[in-house]
Amino acid sequence: LKESIACNNQHDHLKLTFFTDAPLFTGHAVRFVHPTDGIQRDYSPIDAYIKCSKLHLVFIIKVYPSGQMSQWINRLMVGASIAIKEPPVEDVKSYAPHGCWKQLLMIAAGTGVNPMIKIIKYHIDHADDPDLKDCCLVLVWFITTPEASFIDADEICAWVAQLKGKLKVRINFSRSDEAGIKKSKFGQNILSVPGKDVKAALKWAGTKLGSFDLSNLGSTRVIICGPPAFKAEMAATVQTKFLLAQRTLVL
Image 1 (tube, rainbow, N blue to C red):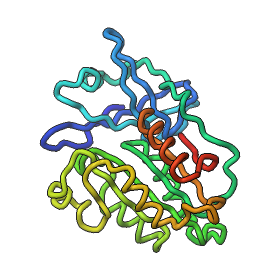
Image 2 (cartoon, rainbow, N blue to C red):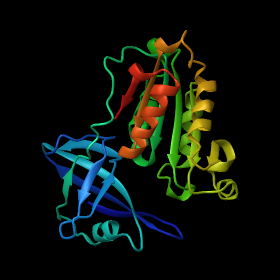
Image 3 (tube, helix red, strand yellow):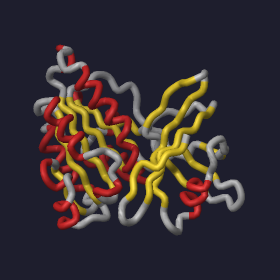
């Protein structure tokens, strides 16, 4: 399935659905391999489901005018095949077991936010569950520009409203300035900041969780998802700076 879903002044966006026998699932990056020149690019599925005994993976891919991989994908016909493999992440490991938590810090880049969205929606759907009553969710999302977001700003505001204070959101737009953010819906009711200041983002998260100290570490967990280099950087920062090594899950 191939569908053009969005267009702005710079790039088109494609929504593509592939099916595979590979043991992959939402949140894990998938490395696409070009069949002729060997170019490889990592993409994260935004959704996954089983149909006709096949795992279907859904991607949103930005088409760049000079992008060799994205232009090739854009030319694919329905029914075409793409060679894939799992990116190497041997240097990033999650500690186990993770146990129970009351405070969850979710750090994501790009489509790596999708596992976090599923957690947020689960809490919305189970708002009356007494076991979730005191849970706190904090999302720090890194993405390039407001135009690159595949999530509508109004939808994020709705999540925050539905969870009635349990969800805090900060979005870092790495390639947008303050003026560009203010012109978008993200500059109205969501904490959105320009640049990729990791230390500032995590300091903000700490103030919302109130748990980056030795007395409360046991009830705090961290989930990190995104491209391999992003995961490695964030895991190292969180595990050393905030003493959460054994409570960090890298997807």
